[in-house]
Image 1 (cartoon, rainbow, N blue to C red):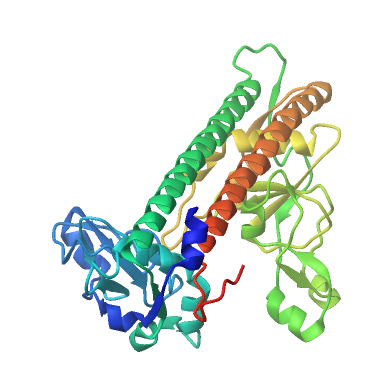
Image 2: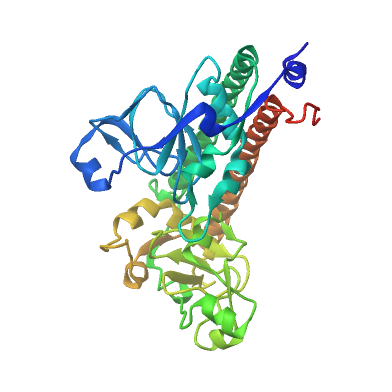
Length: 395
């Protein structure tokens, strides 16, 4: 009899979490306290990552945490050893580990994300009430079955983690290789090509900051409209070509703005510094983005895109600002770039397009592989908890 058959045929008791576990919150903590007490013990609070590391702990060998408030509400974590549990994190501690294995409970709670989400409230700040969580039904199969489930899922977890690490490492290596050859090609160190150094403004047909007299959200609400309006986030999340937009503008909004042509190079100068992308459609954008269209007598817009990408770190280091980093228009208008002949620019674009395609294929293929393995893991985890409250199989 395999593990799935054993699961379907074993006796199971269903009890509320509060019956078999003690649920409690941690202690209040803030960033100032963390900064003044740096150490090696992680601070587990809201969110998926530790809030920081401090020199004291308030929890030991109590690994199951559930975020009680904020954007990550309901997230279930496993935290071994000593750590500091914040007040936005519940612990779920088995009252009798002979009855309920903590690791089994952890896997079951991870498998019950939808059920936990249904217990949360989302009016204002998302929150998970302690009494609601304590009412969550938990299956209690025989201990031997719990052990087999834990062993199986631990092995699968290790496999998925290792595979994800390998694929992520491969993707990172390919991106580094691409960046190296791109930067080498655009450095003109060997002076093999004859180049002139010109400012962006000198080689531009159209160059300037975007305009948005009306907030796109308000403009669309009042006047409707379907004119694409991109934000800095749309550029950051795109590759070479910006194919998606988050908001729209109306014809009325356009009267006090500007619509840039397809192929315009967009450069962010606030929030996400020196991110670049080429418009895949005519669009408007705010003054936190610079638009550049090359004068075809001097330059190819795609060539300028690749060159700015090669000096992105340099540009980011020139940013300034207190609340958030900024670059101004004059930084770019006076920025000098190497300008070889149009023929050489075209050849460089062709080479880098090929590099970009290979890298993009990997960027699609490898994460897709990771996603498929994760879904496969989640499917089998679901099968591990295929207990039926009425005694009949749900397969």
